[in-house]
Image (cartoon, rainbow, N blue to C red; front, side, top):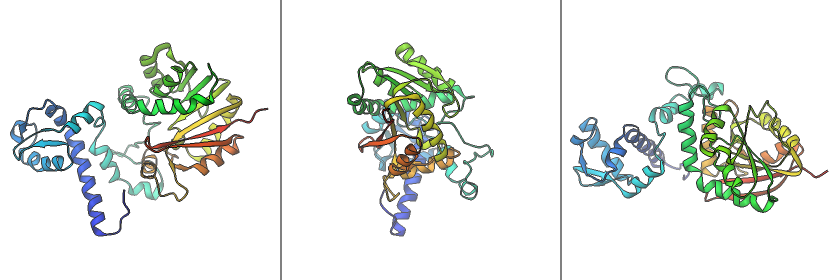
Length: 329
């Protein structure tokens, strides 16, 4: 995203927000699925207000998601591909843009954003234990998006592991990262809360080992040769990460290592874009979470007796891998 240097740039940001809102509404209302059959339809043939549809359709066409003439439309091939990939699932204009309209208390108090009913939106890794179907939907959404990322993580870990290594997939959620490592011949234990373990077990059965618990307070098991933390550290505050790293240090074999997969800010704290804006997500939906620089994460791990040995930047995937090692005795 380019820097704001003029009123025109601010107008562009505002239009982008409106575009996202329109896509969210068309997705949430089922219009995208309805138009996916390739049959051009007019506003009169679609559910919703005819005037509103006629005004919103040019926005969707401008964004490259609708094709057709001035009267009838269907999805573009790009939109069909995105729909098939599940890219539109979970888009909800109230949750995304509505929550942004309620940021003033967050700025003043630092507490997570609240919904229209005043209830906190805080979640644990995007999951609420009492809402198993909501958790299942979110885990499925992450699973669909993680195929390439899981294979890439396994590729970078492979040369650092002995055959048959004992690996901890901490907060492994849907299980795709752990499964990619298990396919290389390693013994992988997925550690997460009950609802996440249940969902992962349904998909992978005995491909993985499972351990249920709260990783900030409960025993992690082990000893492990390596532990993968995929998108975990950004959900925790510095003190929470330090507590977790100390527990992991005790659970590792000498010479074992952690892989901290995450989005990290550059030393200036202004890039990359995904890390910058994901910090806002952490502000809104966690109690202590934030995005970190590599140096900040290395310093926290050092306090736990772990040595930062390497950083692998994977820009096409939008994340980096920090390797931190427990010294050999």
